[in-house]
Length: 465
Image (cartoon, rainbow, N blue to C red; front, top):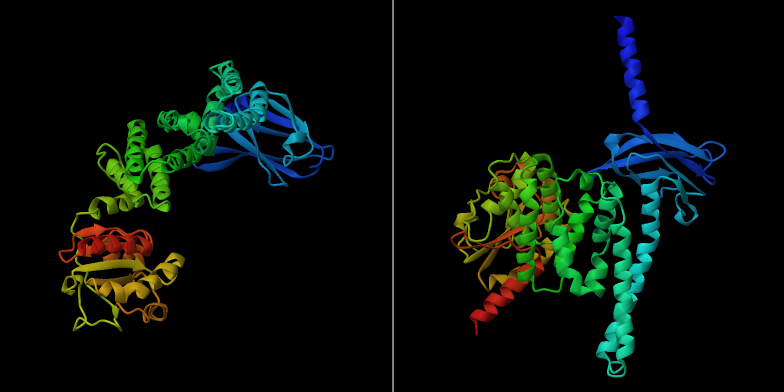
C-alpha cells in the first residue's frame, strides 16, 4: 500500500513537472536579486513562481497550463515585464527589466511576436496621428487646401500604415493566444488617441468594446479585464456627445455586456461590482442606475449581498420614488433652526423642499462639501429649502465638534452603517444627498453642492421669469 501511494505521489509530481513550461534567461545587472512571475485572474493577480537570479545573472521560473494568458516578471527594480504564458518555453537576455530596450527574447515564438508588435505598433500610431494632423491642415487651411497631391499622398500613407498593422495581426495563427490578445490590447490602449486625434473611429471602437465577452477566459487571464471597462466607458464619456446621448450609449453598452454575463454568476458579480464603482466615481449616476436595475432584474442570477445592497439604492431611491420617513433617534443639533419645536422625524419639517445629507466627520469629501452647504443655507432658506444632516459618526465628541457649527438640523445615533436611517436609504458611501419635496418625492440625487446650486439656479430662475 505504501509503495502504491509513493508511486502515485511520484507520478503526480513527474506529471506536473513535465507539464510545466519555463521562463528563463540572463539579466546581467540583477545578479543575486529575487525574481518572480505573477499571473492575472480577472481584477486580481496571483503568484505563479519565484526564484533568485544567480551570481552569473541566470534565472529560471516555471508555469503550468492553468496559468495560460498573460503574466509579468518582477524583480528588485519593481518594473514589470509582461509576457505571454502560452504553453511554450521562453528565454530572454538583457540587463534589467526596467530597461526593456536592453532585453531580447531569444526563444518563444508568441513572445517574440508580442515583442515585435510592442515595438512597431506605437511607432505606427505616432506616425498615423502625425499624418492625421497634417491632413487636416491640407484640407482646412486655405494656404494648403489647393495642394491636392500632398493631401492624396497623406491619405495613401495613412491607409498603408493601417494595412501594415492589420497584416501583422492577420498573419498570426488563430489558435495562438497572442492572436487574440494583441488586438484586444490595441483596442484598450487606443482610446485616448482615438478620442483626441481620430474621432471618426469612435463608433467602430465602441462597437469593438461592446463585442468583448467578459466570460471569455482569455480576457479574464489577460490583465485587461478592468482596463477594458475603464477604457470603454472613458471613451463614451469623452466622445464629444451631449450628456443625454452619452447615457443612452452607456445603457446600450451595459446591455451588451450583460448578454453573456448573466450566464456566468461569478464574473457577473465581479464585473458589476467594478463597473458600478467606476460609474459612481465618475458621477455617472444614470448609467449606474441602469446597471443596478439591469442586474437586479435578472431573476436567474444570484447577486452577492454587498453588491445587491449597493444596487438596491438605484431601485428603491431613484428619482420619482417616495423616500422613507426618518425618525431622528439619538443626538439632535439645530443651532439655527427656526421652525419651532425641534422635529422628531423628517415628516415634521414644514419646508417645501428638504435636502437629506448623509456624511461623517471622518469622510474627507464631507469635510469639503458639508461646510459649503452651511455657506449656502441662508440663501436656500429663501427658497424654502431645509437641510437635514445625518451623521455616521460613532464618537459623540467628533460628531458635535464637526456638526455643532452648522445652522441646519444635524442628527446622529452613533450606529454608523447600522443606523436605521442609513439602511432605509440604502446608503453605502458618504456623502450621499437626496433632495425631496414636501411629499418626500425624490427630485434629485445631487452629486455635489455645485450640482444642487445648479438645480436651484435653474428651477428658481425659470419660475421667476
